Length: 556
Image (cartoon, rainbow, N blue to C red; front, side, top):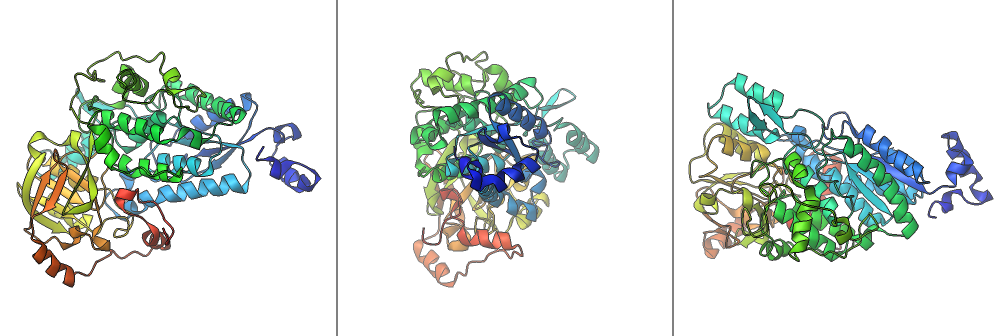
Protein backbone atom coordinates (compact mmCIF):
# COMPACT_ATOMS: atom_id res chain seq x y z
CA UNK A 1 0.00 0.00 0.00
CA UNK A 2 1.05 3.59 -0.58
CA UNK A 3 0.53 4.23 3.13
CA UNK A 4 3.21 1.66 3.98
CA UNK A 5 5.83 4.33 3.45
CA UNK A 6 4.39 6.15 6.46
CA UNK A 7 3.49 3.23 8.72
CA UNK A 8 5.61 0.09 8.13
CA UNK A 9 8.69 -0.93 10.04
CA UNK A 10 10.41 0.19 13.22
CA UNK A 11 11.64 3.36 11.47
CA UNK A 12 8.03 4.53 11.33
CA UNK A 13 7.44 4.20 15.05
CA UNK A 14 7.28 8.04 15.41
CA UNK A 15 4.71 8.22 12.62
CA UNK A 16 2.52 5.58 14.31
CA UNK A 17 2.89 7.37 17.62
CA UNK A 18 1.45 10.54 16.08
CA UNK A 19 -1.41 8.57 14.54
CA UNK A 20 -2.16 7.05 17.93
CA UNK A 21 -2.25 10.56 19.37
CA UNK A 22 -5.10 11.20 16.92
CA UNK A 23 -6.95 8.21 18.40
CA UNK A 24 -6.16 5.54 15.81
CA UNK A 25 -5.46 1.97 16.97
CA UNK A 26 -2.81 -0.41 15.61
CA UNK A 27 -5.42 -2.40 13.74
CA UNK A 28 -6.91 0.75 12.19
CA UNK A 29 -3.50 1.99 11.11
CA UNK A 30 -2.91 -1.28 9.28
CA UNK A 31 -5.95 -0.62 7.07
CA UNK A 32 -5.76 1.28 3.72
CA UNK A 33 -5.74 5.01 4.38
CA UNK A 34 -8.52 6.77 2.52
CA UNK A 35 -8.41 10.54 2.39
CA UNK A 36 -11.92 12.02 2.56
CA UNK A 37 -11.90 15.56 1.21
CA UNK A 38 -14.82 17.39 2.82
CA UNK A 39 -15.70 20.73 1.23
CA UNK A 40 -18.28 21.59 3.89
CA UNK A 41 -18.62 25.23 4.80
CA UNK A 42 -21.34 27.36 6.32
CA UNK A 43 -21.91 29.82 3.46
CA UNK A 44 -22.39 27.74 0.30
CA UNK A 45 -25.97 26.38 0.33
CA UNK A 46 -24.81 23.40 -1.69
CA UNK A 47 -22.27 22.55 1.01
CA UNK A 48 -23.96 23.28 4.32
CA UNK A 49 -25.09 19.63 4.60
CA UNK A 50 -21.82 17.99 3.55
CA UNK A 51 -20.95 17.00 7.12
CA UNK A 52 -23.78 14.46 6.83
CA UNK A 53 -22.60 13.25 3.42
CA UNK A 54 -19.02 12.95 4.65
CA UNK A 55 -20.03 10.94 7.70
CA UNK A 56 -21.90 8.55 5.41
CA UNK A 57 -18.83 8.21 3.18
CA UNK A 58 -16.66 7.46 6.21
CA UNK A 59 -19.14 4.85 7.40
CA UNK A 60 -18.96 3.12 4.02
CA UNK A 61 -15.16 3.14 4.01
CA UNK A 62 -14.95 1.83 7.55
CA UNK A 63 -17.47 -0.92 6.90
CA UNK A 64 -15.47 -2.06 3.88
CA UNK A 65 -12.20 -2.28 5.79
CA UNK A 66 -10.59 1.10 5.18
CA UNK A 67 -9.49 3.88 7.50
CA UNK A 68 -11.28 7.13 6.54
CA UNK A 69 -9.19 10.23 7.22
CA UNK A 70 -11.16 13.44 6.77
CA UNK A 71 -9.65 16.77 5.79
CA UNK A 72 -11.15 20.13 4.72
CA UNK A 73 -11.28 21.80 1.32
CA UNK A 74 -12.21 25.42 0.55
CA UNK A 75 -15.01 26.51 -1.74
CA UNK A 76 -16.54 29.70 -3.16
CA UNK A 77 -20.28 30.27 -3.65
CA UNK A 78 -20.44 31.78 -7.12
CA UNK A 79 -23.83 33.33 -6.48
CA UNK A 80 -22.61 35.25 -3.44
CA UNK A 81 -19.32 36.14 -5.16
CA UNK A 82 -21.16 37.46 -8.24
CA UNK A 83 -20.70 41.00 -9.58
CA UNK A 84 -17.95 42.14 -7.21
CA UNK A 85 -14.25 41.41 -6.74
CA UNK A 86 -15.10 38.09 -5.08
CA UNK A 87 -15.83 36.55 -8.47
CA UNK A 88 -12.19 37.07 -9.46
CA UNK A 89 -11.35 34.31 -6.98
CA UNK A 90 -13.90 31.74 -8.10
CA UNK A 91 -12.23 30.12 -11.10
CA UNK A 92 -8.70 30.38 -9.63
CA UNK A 93 -9.99 28.53 -6.55
CA UNK A 94 -10.31 25.45 -8.77
CA UNK A 95 -6.52 25.22 -9.10
CA UNK A 96 -6.02 25.88 -5.39
CA UNK A 97 -8.45 23.07 -4.54
CA UNK A 98 -6.55 20.68 -6.81
CA UNK A 99 -3.23 21.70 -5.29
CA UNK A 100 -4.44 21.47 -1.68
CA UNK A 101 -5.73 17.93 -2.19
CA UNK A 102 -2.41 16.95 -3.76
CA UNK A 103 -0.60 18.34 -0.71
CA UNK A 104 -2.79 16.40 1.71
CA UNK A 105 -2.68 13.16 -0.28
CA UNK A 106 1.06 13.14 -0.90
CA UNK A 107 1.98 14.60 2.46
CA UNK A 108 0.16 11.78 4.26
CA UNK A 109 0.63 8.86 1.85
CA UNK A 110 -3.07 8.13 1.28
CA UNK A 111 -3.99 4.95 -0.54
CA UNK A 112 -7.19 6.32 -2.04
CA UNK A 113 -9.54 9.27 -2.02
CA UNK A 114 -13.23 10.04 -1.74
CA UNK A 115 -13.92 13.60 -2.79
CA UNK A 116 -17.07 15.15 -1.27
CA UNK A 117 -18.15 18.10 -3.34
CA UNK A 118 -21.16 19.84 -4.85
CA UNK A 119 -20.76 23.34 -6.28
CA UNK A 120 -19.23 25.10 -9.20
CA UNK A 121 -15.40 25.09 -9.07
CA UNK A 122 -15.10 22.58 -6.26
CA UNK A 123 -16.35 19.74 -8.48
CA UNK A 124 -13.79 20.15 -11.29
CA UNK A 125 -11.04 21.05 -8.80
CA UNK A 126 -11.55 17.74 -7.02
CA UNK A 127 -11.81 15.81 -10.29
CA UNK A 128 -8.56 17.42 -11.47
CA UNK A 129 -6.90 16.34 -8.23
CA UNK A 130 -8.09 12.77 -8.75
CA UNK A 131 -6.74 12.79 -12.30
CA UNK A 132 -3.40 14.31 -11.27
CA UNK A 133 -2.77 12.05 -8.29
CA UNK A 134 -4.12 8.91 -9.97
CA UNK A 135 -4.95 7.24 -6.66
CA UNK A 136 -8.09 5.08 -6.57
CA UNK A 137 -10.77 7.76 -6.21
CA UNK A 138 -14.53 8.32 -6.14
CA UNK A 139 -16.24 11.71 -6.44
CA UNK A 140 -19.55 12.10 -4.58
CA UNK A 141 -21.71 15.22 -4.72
CA UNK A 142 -24.11 16.58 -2.10
CA UNK A 143 -26.97 16.68 -4.61
CA UNK A 144 -29.17 19.36 -6.16
CA UNK A 145 -31.45 21.85 -4.44
CA UNK A 146 -35.17 21.48 -4.97
CA UNK A 147 -36.79 24.17 -7.08
CA UNK A 148 -38.65 26.94 -5.25
CA UNK A 149 -42.32 27.79 -5.66
CA UNK A 150 -44.34 30.96 -5.15
CA UNK A 151 -48.05 31.34 -5.89
CA UNK A 152 -47.94 28.49 -8.37
CA UNK A 153 -44.77 29.75 -10.08
CA UNK A 154 -41.64 27.56 -10.15
CA UNK A 155 -38.48 29.47 -9.21
CA UNK A 156 -34.72 29.04 -8.99
CA UNK A 157 -31.74 31.33 -8.39
CA UNK A 158 -31.92 32.63 -11.94
CA UNK A 159 -35.41 33.95 -11.16
CA UNK A 160 -33.88 36.29 -8.58
CA UNK A 161 -31.11 37.57 -10.85
CA UNK A 162 -33.60 38.23 -13.65
CA UNK A 163 -35.90 39.81 -11.07
CA UNK A 164 -33.23 42.45 -10.50
CA UNK A 165 -33.42 43.34 -14.18
CA UNK A 166 -37.21 43.46 -13.99
CA UNK A 167 -37.03 45.78 -11.00
CA UNK A 168 -34.57 48.06 -12.83
CA UNK A 169 -36.97 48.19 -15.77
CA UNK A 170 -39.89 49.06 -13.48
CA UNK A 171 -41.70 45.81 -14.21
CA UNK A 172 -41.96 44.61 -10.59
CA UNK A 173 -41.98 46.29 -7.18
CA UNK A 174 -39.52 45.93 -4.30
CA UNK A 175 -42.08 43.76 -2.52
CA UNK A 176 -42.50 41.44 -5.52
CA UNK A 177 -38.74 41.06 -5.86
CA UNK A 178 -38.50 40.26 -2.15
CA UNK A 179 -41.11 37.53 -2.55
CA UNK A 180 -39.00 35.94 -5.29
CA UNK A 181 -35.86 36.33 -3.15
CA UNK A 182 -37.54 34.59 -0.19
CA UNK A 183 -38.81 31.60 -2.17
CA UNK A 184 -36.38 30.87 -5.01
CA UNK A 185 -33.88 28.81 -3.00
CA UNK A 186 -35.83 26.64 -0.51
CA UNK A 187 -33.00 24.68 1.09
CA UNK A 188 -29.63 22.98 0.82
CA UNK A 189 -28.16 21.66 -2.39
CA UNK A 190 -26.61 22.93 -5.61
CA UNK A 191 -28.91 25.48 -7.31
CA UNK A 192 -31.86 23.72 -8.92
CA UNK A 193 -31.28 24.35 -12.64
CA UNK A 194 -28.80 22.86 -15.09
CA UNK A 195 -26.32 25.46 -13.95
CA UNK A 196 -22.59 24.80 -13.59
CA UNK A 197 -22.69 22.82 -10.34
CA UNK A 198 -25.36 20.38 -11.45
CA UNK A 199 -23.91 20.15 -14.94
CA UNK A 200 -20.53 19.17 -13.53
CA UNK A 201 -22.06 16.66 -11.10
CA UNK A 202 -23.77 15.08 -14.11
CA UNK A 203 -20.42 15.15 -15.96
CA UNK A 204 -18.75 13.29 -13.08
CA UNK A 205 -21.37 10.55 -13.44
CA UNK A 206 -21.01 10.51 -17.23
CA UNK A 207 -17.20 10.31 -17.00
CA UNK A 208 -17.47 7.31 -14.67
CA UNK A 209 -15.80 9.04 -11.68
CA UNK A 210 -19.08 9.09 -9.74
CA UNK A 211 -21.68 6.44 -8.99
CA UNK A 212 -24.97 6.18 -10.82
CA UNK A 213 -27.26 8.86 -9.39
CA UNK A 214 -24.46 11.27 -8.53
CA UNK A 215 -25.86 13.98 -10.77
CA UNK A 216 -29.53 14.00 -9.85
CA UNK A 217 -30.52 12.49 -6.48
CA UNK A 218 -31.77 15.53 -4.49
CA UNK A 219 -29.76 16.82 -1.56
CA UNK A 220 -32.71 16.35 0.80
CA UNK A 221 -33.46 12.76 -0.26
CA UNK A 222 -32.20 9.89 1.89
CA UNK A 223 -30.95 8.25 -1.30
CA UNK A 224 -28.16 10.81 -1.32
CA UNK A 225 -26.90 9.55 2.07
CA UNK A 226 -27.14 5.95 0.89
CA UNK A 227 -25.18 6.87 -2.24
CA UNK A 228 -22.48 8.42 -0.07
CA UNK A 229 -22.14 5.18 1.91
CA UNK A 230 -21.88 3.29 -1.38
CA UNK A 231 -19.16 5.72 -2.53
CA UNK A 232 -17.14 4.82 0.57
CA UNK A 233 -17.51 1.13 -0.20
CA UNK A 234 -16.73 1.70 -3.88
CA UNK A 235 -13.30 3.22 -3.25
CA UNK A 236 -12.29 0.08 -1.37
CA UNK A 237 -13.31 -1.98 -4.40
CA UNK A 238 -11.16 0.24 -6.62
CA UNK A 239 -8.16 -0.33 -4.33
CA UNK A 240 -8.73 -4.08 -4.42
CA UNK A 241 -8.91 -4.08 -8.23
CA UNK A 242 -6.25 -1.36 -8.65
CA UNK A 243 -8.56 0.77 -10.80
CA UNK A 244 -7.29 4.33 -10.98
CA UNK A 245 -8.73 7.58 -12.38
CA UNK A 246 -6.61 7.49 -15.52
CA UNK A 247 -7.96 4.01 -16.25
CA UNK A 248 -11.40 5.62 -16.26
CA UNK A 249 -10.62 9.06 -17.76
CA UNK A 250 -9.88 8.00 -21.33
CA UNK A 251 -10.67 10.07 -24.41
CA UNK A 252 -13.72 7.87 -24.94
CA UNK A 253 -14.93 8.77 -21.42
CA UNK A 254 -14.64 12.46 -22.26
CA UNK A 255 -16.54 11.84 -25.48
CA UNK A 256 -19.29 10.26 -23.36
CA UNK A 257 -19.32 13.29 -21.07
CA UNK A 258 -19.53 15.69 -24.02
CA UNK A 259 -22.44 13.72 -25.46
CA UNK A 260 -24.31 13.87 -22.16
CA UNK A 261 -23.47 17.56 -21.74
CA UNK A 262 -24.78 18.42 -25.20
CA UNK A 263 -27.93 16.35 -24.74
CA UNK A 264 -28.60 18.08 -21.40
CA UNK A 265 -27.85 21.60 -22.65
CA UNK A 266 -25.34 22.07 -19.83
CA UNK A 267 -23.40 25.08 -18.64
CA UNK A 268 -20.88 26.85 -20.86
CA UNK A 269 -18.40 26.29 -18.03
CA UNK A 270 -18.04 22.66 -19.10
CA UNK A 271 -15.91 24.00 -21.95
CA UNK A 272 -13.48 25.17 -19.24
CA UNK A 273 -13.72 22.29 -16.81
CA UNK A 274 -13.79 19.20 -19.02
CA UNK A 275 -10.60 20.28 -20.87
CA UNK A 276 -9.02 21.08 -17.48
CA UNK A 277 -9.84 17.61 -16.11
CA UNK A 278 -8.52 16.09 -19.33
CA UNK A 279 -5.31 18.14 -18.98
CA UNK A 280 -4.89 16.86 -15.43
CA UNK A 281 -5.26 13.32 -16.78
CA UNK A 282 -2.56 13.93 -19.38
CA UNK A 283 -4.96 14.38 -22.30
CA UNK A 284 -5.93 17.22 -24.61
CA UNK A 285 -9.62 17.88 -25.24
CA UNK A 286 -10.05 20.25 -28.20
CA UNK A 287 -13.20 22.37 -28.11
CA UNK A 288 -13.92 21.49 -31.74
CA UNK A 289 -15.24 18.22 -30.32
CA UNK A 290 -18.27 20.12 -28.98
CA UNK A 291 -19.32 20.81 -32.57
CA UNK A 292 -18.34 17.39 -33.90
CA UNK A 293 -20.28 15.51 -31.24
CA UNK A 294 -23.06 18.11 -31.16
CA UNK A 295 -23.71 17.50 -34.85
CA UNK A 296 -24.82 13.92 -34.10
CA UNK A 297 -26.04 14.21 -30.48
CA UNK A 298 -29.23 16.29 -30.26
CA UNK A 299 -30.48 18.41 -27.37
CA UNK A 300 -32.89 16.12 -25.48
CA UNK A 301 -33.52 17.89 -22.14
CA UNK A 302 -35.02 21.38 -21.81
CA UNK A 303 -33.54 22.36 -18.47
CA UNK A 304 -33.50 25.71 -16.68
CA UNK A 305 -32.22 28.30 -17.58
CA UNK A 306 -33.01 27.51 -21.22
CA UNK A 307 -36.13 25.47 -20.41
CA UNK A 308 -38.69 24.87 -17.70
CA UNK A 309 -37.43 21.64 -16.13
CA UNK A 310 -35.21 21.36 -13.05
CA UNK A 311 -32.89 18.66 -11.75
CA UNK A 312 -35.61 17.05 -9.66
CA UNK A 313 -37.62 16.61 -12.87
CA UNK A 314 -34.62 14.97 -14.56
CA UNK A 315 -34.16 12.68 -11.55
CA UNK A 316 -37.79 11.61 -11.57
CA UNK A 317 -37.69 11.06 -15.33
CA UNK A 318 -34.82 8.59 -15.12
CA UNK A 319 -31.75 10.67 -14.28
CA UNK A 320 -28.45 10.86 -16.10
CA UNK A 321 -28.52 7.08 -16.35
CA UNK A 322 -31.83 7.19 -18.25
CA UNK A 323 -30.43 9.75 -20.66
CA UNK A 324 -27.23 7.74 -21.11
CA UNK A 325 -29.24 4.60 -21.76
CA UNK A 326 -31.02 6.38 -24.61
CA UNK A 327 -27.73 7.58 -26.05
CA UNK A 328 -26.18 4.12 -25.69
CA UNK A 329 -29.12 2.50 -27.46
CA UNK A 330 -28.43 4.73 -30.48
CA UNK A 331 -24.68 4.15 -30.41
CA UNK A 332 -23.96 7.75 -29.34
CA UNK A 333 -21.80 6.88 -26.32
CA UNK A 334 -19.24 4.18 -25.55
CA UNK A 335 -20.61 1.32 -23.45
CA UNK A 336 -17.55 -0.76 -22.61
CA UNK A 337 -15.63 1.78 -20.52
CA UNK A 338 -14.67 1.00 -16.92
CA UNK A 339 -16.15 3.15 -14.13
CA UNK A 340 -15.79 3.58 -10.36
CA UNK A 341 -18.38 0.85 -9.85
CA UNK A 342 -15.82 -1.61 -11.17
CA UNK A 343 -18.28 -2.39 -13.95
CA UNK A 344 -18.71 -0.94 -17.41
CA UNK A 345 -20.95 1.90 -18.56
CA UNK A 346 -23.20 -0.67 -20.23
CA UNK A 347 -23.44 -2.74 -17.05
CA UNK A 348 -24.23 0.36 -14.97
CA UNK A 349 -27.08 1.24 -17.34
CA UNK A 350 -28.61 -2.23 -17.56
CA UNK A 351 -31.62 -1.28 -15.41
CA UNK A 352 -31.90 2.37 -16.46
CA UNK A 353 -35.07 3.62 -18.11
CA UNK A 354 -36.83 6.84 -18.99
CA UNK A 355 -40.30 7.35 -17.55
CA UNK A 356 -41.04 10.85 -18.91
CA UNK A 357 -40.40 11.50 -22.59
CA UNK A 358 -41.04 15.21 -22.20
CA UNK A 359 -38.15 15.66 -19.74
CA UNK A 360 -35.81 13.27 -21.58
CA UNK A 361 -36.88 13.31 -25.21
CA UNK A 362 -36.35 10.35 -27.54
CA UNK A 363 -33.35 10.84 -29.82
CA UNK A 364 -35.76 10.96 -32.77
CA UNK A 365 -37.79 13.83 -31.25
CA UNK A 366 -35.28 16.28 -29.71
CA UNK A 367 -35.80 19.82 -28.50
CA UNK A 368 -33.04 20.85 -30.92
CA UNK A 369 -31.29 18.86 -33.64
CA UNK A 370 -27.85 19.94 -32.39
CA UNK A 371 -26.38 19.70 -28.89
CA UNK A 372 -26.74 22.51 -26.37
CA UNK A 373 -23.30 24.16 -26.70
CA UNK A 374 -21.48 25.51 -29.74
CA UNK A 375 -17.85 26.44 -30.29
CA UNK A 376 -17.60 29.42 -32.65
CA UNK A 377 -14.75 31.30 -34.33
CA UNK A 378 -14.20 34.36 -36.48
CA UNK A 379 -12.31 37.62 -36.76
CA UNK A 380 -13.45 38.62 -33.27
CA UNK A 381 -12.47 35.25 -31.78
CA UNK A 382 -9.65 33.69 -33.85
CA UNK A 383 -9.04 30.97 -31.24
CA UNK A 384 -12.72 30.53 -30.47
CA UNK A 385 -15.59 31.32 -28.13
CA UNK A 386 -18.45 29.37 -26.55
CA UNK A 387 -22.22 29.85 -26.48
CA UNK A 388 -25.13 27.88 -25.01
CA UNK A 389 -27.08 27.79 -28.27
CA UNK A 390 -29.99 25.89 -26.72
CA UNK A 391 -30.68 28.93 -24.49
CA UNK A 392 -30.62 31.49 -27.33
CA UNK A 393 -33.94 32.72 -28.68
CA UNK A 394 -34.42 31.76 -32.36
CA UNK A 395 -34.45 35.37 -33.49
CA UNK A 396 -31.00 35.94 -31.96
CA UNK A 397 -29.19 32.97 -33.49
CA UNK A 398 -28.19 35.30 -36.31
CA UNK A 399 -27.68 38.94 -35.29
CA UNK A 400 -25.76 42.01 -36.43
CA UNK A 401 -25.50 45.20 -34.43
CA UNK A 402 -23.35 48.03 -33.10
CA UNK A 403 -20.87 47.38 -30.31
CA UNK A 404 -21.34 48.96 -26.90
CA UNK A 405 -17.90 48.63 -25.36
CA UNK A 406 -17.06 48.27 -21.65
CA UNK A 407 -13.70 47.49 -20.06
CA UNK A 408 -15.11 45.76 -16.98
CA UNK A 409 -18.27 44.05 -15.77
CA UNK A 410 -19.19 46.82 -13.33
CA UNK A 411 -19.41 49.47 -16.06
CA UNK A 412 -21.50 47.21 -18.29
CA UNK A 413 -23.88 46.27 -15.47
CA UNK A 414 -24.36 49.94 -14.55
CA UNK A 415 -25.22 50.87 -18.13
CA UNK A 416 -27.65 47.97 -18.51
CA UNK A 417 -29.43 48.62 -15.21
CA UNK A 418 -29.66 52.33 -16.13
CA UNK A 419 -31.47 51.32 -19.34
CA UNK A 420 -28.69 52.73 -21.55
CA UNK A 421 -28.60 49.71 -23.88
CA UNK A 422 -30.78 49.89 -26.99
CA UNK A 423 -32.47 47.20 -29.04
CA UNK A 424 -30.01 45.74 -31.53
CA UNK A 425 -26.90 46.55 -29.48
CA UNK A 426 -24.08 44.08 -28.92
CA UNK A 427 -22.66 44.59 -25.42
CA UNK A 428 -18.90 43.89 -25.34
CA UNK A 429 -17.26 43.31 -21.94
CA UNK A 430 -13.51 42.86 -22.19
CA UNK A 431 -10.41 42.68 -20.00
CA UNK A 432 -12.27 40.07 -17.94
CA UNK A 433 -10.39 37.00 -19.21
CA UNK A 434 -8.16 34.70 -17.14
CA UNK A 435 -5.29 37.22 -17.26
CA UNK A 436 -7.17 40.48 -17.72
CA UNK A 437 -9.62 40.08 -14.85
CA UNK A 438 -7.73 38.35 -13.52
CA UNK A 439 -9.79 35.28 -12.80
CA UNK A 440 -12.32 35.28 -15.67
CA UNK A 441 -15.41 36.47 -13.84
CA UNK A 442 -18.93 35.19 -14.51
CA UNK A 443 -21.34 37.69 -16.05
CA UNK A 444 -24.68 36.56 -14.62
CA UNK A 445 -25.65 40.02 -13.41
CA UNK A 446 -25.50 41.77 -16.83
CA UNK A 447 -26.95 38.83 -18.78
CA UNK A 448 -29.81 38.40 -16.32
CA UNK A 449 -30.50 42.15 -16.36
CA UNK A 450 -30.82 42.05 -20.15
CA UNK A 451 -33.27 39.15 -19.95
CA UNK A 452 -35.20 40.67 -17.05
CA UNK A 453 -35.65 43.91 -19.00
CA UNK A 454 -37.21 41.95 -21.84
CA UNK A 455 -34.32 42.57 -24.25
CA UNK A 456 -33.26 38.95 -24.72
CA UNK A 457 -34.72 39.00 -28.24
CA UNK A 458 -32.83 42.13 -29.31
CA UNK A 459 -29.53 42.46 -27.40
CA UNK A 460 -26.44 40.21 -27.46
CA UNK A 461 -23.50 40.15 -25.04
CA UNK A 462 -19.93 39.12 -25.86
CA UNK A 463 -17.06 38.79 -23.39
CA UNK A 464 -13.60 37.33 -22.86
CA UNK A 465 -14.92 36.50 -19.40
CA UNK A 466 -17.34 33.69 -18.77
CA UNK A 467 -20.93 33.06 -17.76
CA UNK A 468 -22.82 31.39 -14.98
CA UNK A 469 -24.56 28.18 -15.87
CA UNK A 470 -27.73 30.15 -15.11
CA UNK A 471 -27.08 32.52 -18.00
CA UNK A 472 -29.41 32.44 -20.97
CA UNK A 473 -29.82 34.51 -24.10
CA UNK A 474 -27.38 35.47 -26.88
CA UNK A 475 -24.39 35.41 -24.53
CA UNK A 476 -21.05 34.49 -26.08
CA UNK A 477 -18.10 34.03 -23.72
CA UNK A 478 -14.51 32.81 -23.42
CA UNK A 479 -13.55 34.95 -26.45
CA UNK A 480 -9.93 34.06 -27.19
CA UNK A 481 -7.37 35.52 -27.43
CA UNK A 482 -8.54 37.75 -24.61
CA UNK A 483 -8.11 41.53 -24.72
CA UNK A 484 -5.32 41.55 -22.13
CA UNK A 485 -3.00 39.60 -24.45
CA UNK A 486 -3.86 41.61 -27.55
CA UNK A 487 -6.89 39.73 -28.85
CA UNK A 488 -9.15 41.46 -31.41
CA UNK A 489 -11.83 42.02 -28.76
CA UNK A 490 -9.45 44.62 -27.32
CA UNK A 491 -9.54 46.55 -30.63
CA UNK A 492 -13.33 46.95 -30.79
CA UNK A 493 -14.57 50.53 -30.69
CA UNK A 494 -17.98 51.93 -29.86
CA UNK A 495 -20.32 51.54 -32.82
CA UNK A 496 -18.33 48.88 -34.69
CA UNK A 497 -20.64 46.35 -36.31
CA UNK A 498 -20.41 42.80 -34.92
CA UNK A 499 -21.91 39.84 -36.77
CA UNK A 500 -23.10 36.74 -34.92
CA UNK A 501 -24.09 33.58 -36.82
CA UNK A 502 -24.42 30.74 -34.32
CA UNK A 503 -25.69 28.09 -36.79
CA UNK A 504 -22.65 28.83 -38.97
CA UNK A 505 -20.38 28.92 -35.87
CA UNK A 506 -19.16 32.44 -36.79
CA UNK A 507 -18.36 35.56 -34.73
CA UNK A 508 -16.95 38.44 -36.75
CA UNK A 509 -15.94 42.07 -36.26
CA UNK A 510 -16.96 43.91 -39.44
CA UNK A 511 -13.96 46.22 -39.55
CA UNK A 512 -11.36 46.12 -42.30
CA UNK A 513 -7.95 44.64 -41.63
CA UNK A 514 -6.39 47.96 -42.60
CA UNK A 515 -8.30 49.80 -39.87
CA UNK A 516 -7.55 47.06 -37.33
CA UNK A 517 -3.85 47.24 -38.20
CA UNK A 518 -3.79 50.96 -37.37
CA UNK A 519 -5.63 50.32 -34.11
CA UNK A 520 -3.22 47.51 -33.27
CA UNK A 521 -0.23 49.84 -33.61
CA UNK A 522 -1.65 52.12 -30.91
CA UNK A 523 -3.17 49.40 -28.72
CA UNK A 524 -1.81 49.00 -25.21
CA UNK A 525 -3.48 46.12 -23.36
CA UNK A 526 -5.07 47.13 -20.08
CA UNK A 527 -5.20 44.78 -17.16
CA UNK A 528 -7.41 45.42 -14.21
CA UNK A 529 -5.40 46.35 -11.11
CA UNK A 530 -5.30 43.73 -8.40
CA UNK A 531 -3.81 43.74 -4.91
CA UNK A 532 -4.06 39.99 -4.26
CA UNK A 533 -0.72 38.11 -4.45
CA UNK A 534 -2.67 34.94 -5.30
CA UNK A 535 -4.48 36.55 -8.25
CA UNK A 536 -1.20 38.09 -9.42
CA UNK A 537 0.34 34.63 -9.58
CA UNK A 538 -2.76 33.26 -11.31
CA UNK A 539 -2.59 36.03 -13.94
CA UNK A 540 1.03 35.13 -14.67
CA UNK A 541 0.41 31.46 -15.43
CA UNK A 542 -3.25 31.15 -16.56
CA UNK A 543 -3.91 29.80 -20.03
CA UNK A 544 -6.70 31.04 -22.31
CA UNK A 545 -10.39 30.33 -21.87
CA UNK A 546 -10.39 27.90 -24.79
CA UNK A 547 -7.53 25.98 -23.12
CA UNK A 548 -9.44 25.52 -19.87
CA UNK A 549 -7.78 28.45 -18.02
CA UNK A 550 -5.42 25.98 -16.34
CA UNK A 551 -2.12 27.07 -14.82
CA UNK A 552 0.77 26.22 -17.11
CA UNK A 553 4.50 26.40 -16.63
CA UNK A 554 6.05 29.38 -18.38
CA UNK A 555 7.72 26.98 -20.82
CA UNK A 556 4.42 25.34 -21.84
